[in-house]
Image 1: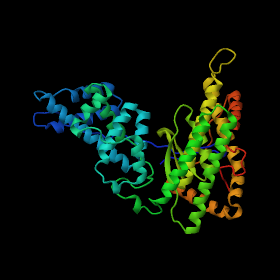
Image 2: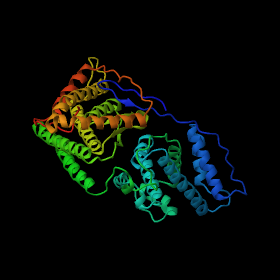
Image 3: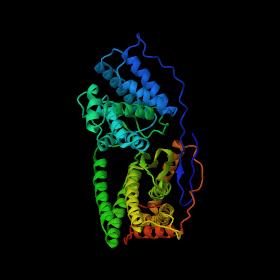
Image 4: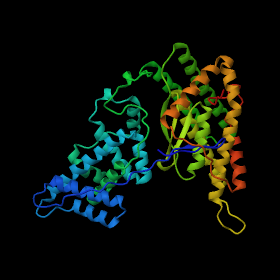
Length: 452
């Protein structure tokens, strides 16, 4: 495992992953004594190897072979053989992803990032097909939530008919289905290993997971978080800064009380539940300053974020209530920042050359830096207003638990520095936008952003 880097104020811990080289394969030809299944497997292996070697000509040739019947073989028989081969290999790739620490949302998001949304829809179907093999009692509730959000369910009649059903839904020819399926098999085969953040399907149930409760506490969490989401949605949509300020302040106050109540209750009852984790997308363009923004929001909420630059997301570790606050606040802040940045319009220098990209990069970096400053200023006031000295030891203990989880999951993180900023105008505009984001409001209890 290679290292990561983080800065003091606007830094971000970054975990780099590297792929192993493809092993050499020997694939049998489609000789007279070779079964259709063996021939389809051999051609698929050759197509995957062509993708690994970057040989587009060989890949297209193998896709044509998988689409065209062999010799005197009937078209229906060959299409069924290739369909079963590709279905099996996609499902095996999904199983391999689970074993490497990936979760459903991670796989679909990464597939869309590296390939296309069409491939992501095919991956969603492969996930649905694979998950049908597990009883609901052996699937963690976090996985079920992701599957519901993705809409990962078997909508086709049976696996043999899925390729034609998918092709009709997408409005594409059979050859494109074959190409997409092989590309997905290749992607899944070379997914890097990630730290596991929960039991894979078939190994555990929610009720059997230490420190987890499947009844009242989760219901209370969801009700509270739904109210927070509604407040933030209104803050993002209003055109009036004063209204956005009031709505954001109310959301933060609610999250602060919710999180602190969880911390104090856990301390009083001796709850042994520890930190959990979730992966939050950090998308292009300007992914580096976005990762910094997520880092400062996470740290303000007693969480830690590690950015997987190549994979397009950050792993955030913390206690469940804090993780929910981080995801919602980061999303809301990013929406507000993007709106302000776009409203500022394009930029050009004195010679008419575009400076929009450097302006926006500086804008988001400054925005993240200023948000971090404001969160640190608000932290002490929030903790003091909610519990004072009695709360500090509880929060400190939770911080230590989160730090230990990060050290265990990412033992090779190193320190570094964020990229430089070259557009002063963008930096000034970004800081101004962060001030208008009004995270603290005018309330004494300033929100979920607490630091001891």
